[in-house]
Image (cartoon, rainbow, N blue to C red):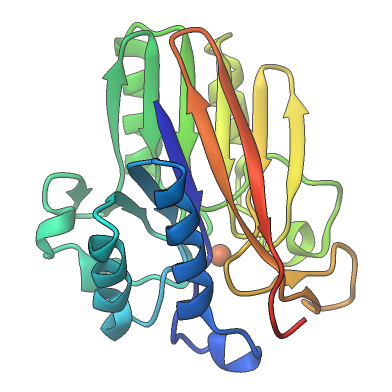
Length: 244
Ligand SMILES: [Fe+2]
């Protein structure tokens, strides 16, 4: 299967106001490209928008007749989304996480919006990894689980307790392909059998090393992920911002 990952849109939220980017335009360019490549499925891995603008995203995606999945990021309020029809079959009272099996692949969709994986979700994760039979894990989550080289975001806004989460995956002795966002930049990191790909934001990229979070560029990207029964690969599709 082929899936396109879009992340960290921040459409109309308070972060959007700090940057000269046009997220609607960026999203439209990305969706047009996805459609032109005949990709049908997309996943948005969190930091979506101001809650009142969520319909803008879904309307745009619907207009391109794409099917979509949504994860929560640290700027998203689950209380707003959990009663919506789109989330009804996947959400739980404490968050938006679920799994599915396709052939030998175990797909995990996790909720790191609180900058931590709370006990209930952690127990659920352990149970699924123990109970299901699979050859590899494809994990979608807002936050990176592996350190990306001591970046500003690693220092300021990491996933708390991430070593423990990585260890839970290491114990499976299976390959894990992890797709995330949150760091507003492109990073590829591997630790043992975990392959972590961080996808740039649709709003703004941040400098890798700076005192506080500082703008690097308004250029943006999305990721195309190809998954078969024996192989997982991905590539970034880059876009120039008219404002950069
Ligand atoms: Fe984030």
